[in-house]
Image 1 (cartoon, one colour):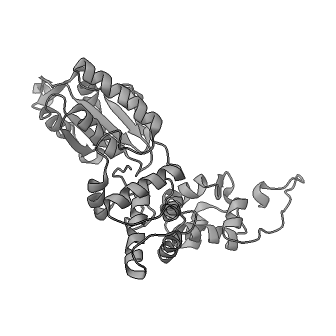
Image 2 (cartoon, one colour; image 1 turned 180 degrees about the vertical axis):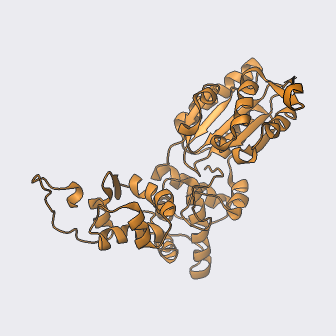
Image 3 (cartoon, helix red, strand yellow; image 1 turned 60 degrees about the vertical axis):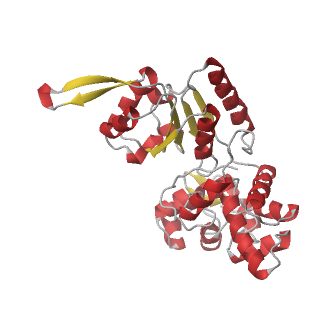
Length: 357
């Protein structure tokens, strides 16, 4: 079970199937987070590799290598950073890239670190360039140069740092400059979870929340969780509320399905926004192709909301395709909404267009 704090574009914080964490999520996650790698569910390869890195560092009596974790929000980057600190028996300092806008901000944090301390830097790709360049030397040589004064009289005073472990987290690893990526001794990409792993997450969380749930109920919630533990736990809490009010408190497959129908989360994890995009694409534009701006107007949302919030999951589920001509619905989209696609049209060269568009 794993989570981390991030936001994606213009995504609304109250979206039930959104991966961003709101205040309630953060409060609950603090109680549900696993404390060590043995409790951590999923990400087997990452866990195995990270376990070797940490064991070797402890055997040498040294600080662990710097770690870079990449992946979508809600998969466990913050949780792993806390586990790294716990496994190394070290304190952890948590900050984020947007909070470090000047090199002086970073220097103040680095100069106050204790030996062996873990510094977790979330959204590291959003850190300012001057701070980023200071971080290069800090990671490699455990030293920073503090500039005193301005203009021709400015003086660089070298400041030695105690050995520390930087854990960087990013949802966009491609935005990190190569010199920064190269300074991490261990990099890992967090994958989306499979249904079986999410069922284990739901069962574990249900136990910690003192919620009764049967295997079919856990499977129903897991199947609508978009491969993301944070969403699975959020859905579990909403289904728990429904079960307590409308039933005897036990979460079964029927109760879970009825509860999530109230919250407009369908069997594949699509919510109102996702279905609105698909319905506009299918019913108004015959499955496409249609431009993003036109599609956004039809849905009544901002262009960025459709592109950054709805489309990534629809593309990953194989319900929508981005083509040079515009957005195109796949056969799976027609089937999911129980609609019949129009007869296939032929292009000028006698060949059928993609997906019959």
